[in-house]
Length: 112
Ligand code: 5GP
Ligand code: ZN
Image 1 (cartoon, helix red, strand yellow):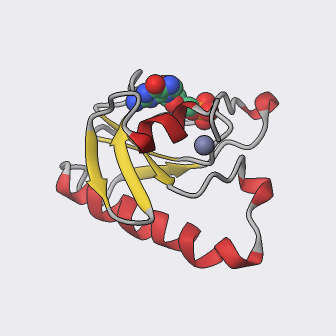
Image 2 (cartoon, protein in one colour):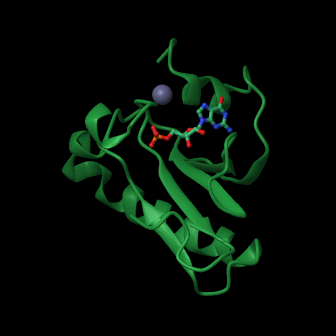
């Protein structure tokens, strides 16, 4: 999507501090971290929001969680991290390219 900020990060048009990349997924540092460890995991496929996930995307979304946990461990969270998807502006979704927040590095990061 040409006007999507995360598609621009995927395309290398906007810089990001990448922690992981393969042919389907990237993980990168959140620009405004809410915890000592706070990064985002996104699919290279543009899916707007969790509510737009189709059956064919199920494996990809599971992989985002698996890679998120792997990158969390590599970045020192131990086994304590939060895994958050926001859906819709009223729930705080500001970027409409699906993303998994991983937060850790302190007790109860970003507790709701
Ligand atoms: P949301 O509120 O949509 O669930 O989360 C969007 C997240 O993306 C926010 O935590 C915000 O700090 C992060 N973000 C927004 N724009 C950029 C950007 O250009 N680069 C990076 N690295 N993170 C961004
Ligand atoms: Zn996008």
